[in-house]
Amino acid sequence: MIFEDYVLVIDANFPSGASEIIPKIRALTDKPIRFAFDTHHHGDHAYGNQVWVDNGATPVAHTGVIEEMKRYETGYYGGKPGRWEDTAKTRPDVAASKLKPPSVLFPREMVFDDGKHRVELMHLGVAHTHGDAFAWLPNERILFTGDACVNGPYNFVGDGNVEKWVATLEAARKLGARIVCPGHGPRGVETVLADQQRFFKSLREQVGALVKAKKSAQEVRSSIEKINATLAADSQIARFVGKGNSFGSQVEKVYTEMTGQPLPAVNKVARAERNRHAISHGLDSLA
Ligand SMILES: [Zn+2]
Image (cartoon, rainbow, N blue to C red):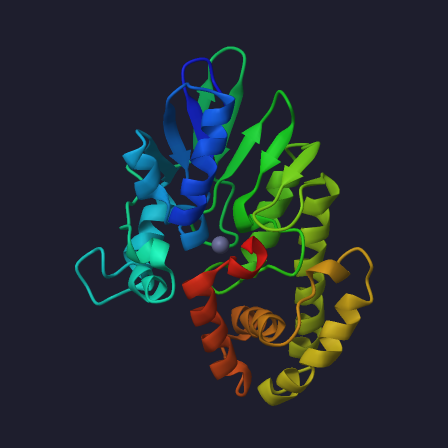
């Protein structure tokens, strides 16, 4: 977003992504890049912060991003190696940079408004993480969602809460966006939010029906393929339905939210999936 006196960047990206986008911004404007807004704490959205700082910008985020970083970036905060160090093992750009937590924080919302352009950064509740925030451009009715909304089989549920996610998407829908820029997948129109929400609602309905019928964890585990097929048969949400581990871990997450129990056989798979995501979240879709 190019304001009268400065540029606001939405999502810091990985360090390599930040380095890639800066010349593109420079081709558009010579105004200083003052702020980089992290929609949440994940590496593909926040690990480029240091690159932006090196270029004169200040990382901005919802206060929940710092809480999440304290939880997962234990290496930075003086504990054992955390996600940054894990990611650095496989990403030279991360290994060559360092974690820079956002230092301008807002508890609910923050507004940038120069009289011509307006961007409202807003936390609408727990979704993909506990620190998600959206960037809303009310004049243009454009909404940047971070990973609270994706457009394709990119949902990662390990750090969030699916039940609350549905409610947060409801709040986002009320904004009345005309254009939705998701965290992964192609830009879309307002229906993307509704589709993303329907995917989670359907997932919760399917798993909830098994829980209500008192099916065992093993039986729920055995139903993953069937749930996958049911959701994939709904043309409105089929594109959100992933295959294999990623879908299994989504079923397990919902089951665990409903019962407090893990799924026996998916357990390890989900943990591996969580690990994989922590290391290279978004890598497939960024390629
Ligand atoms: Zn993410």
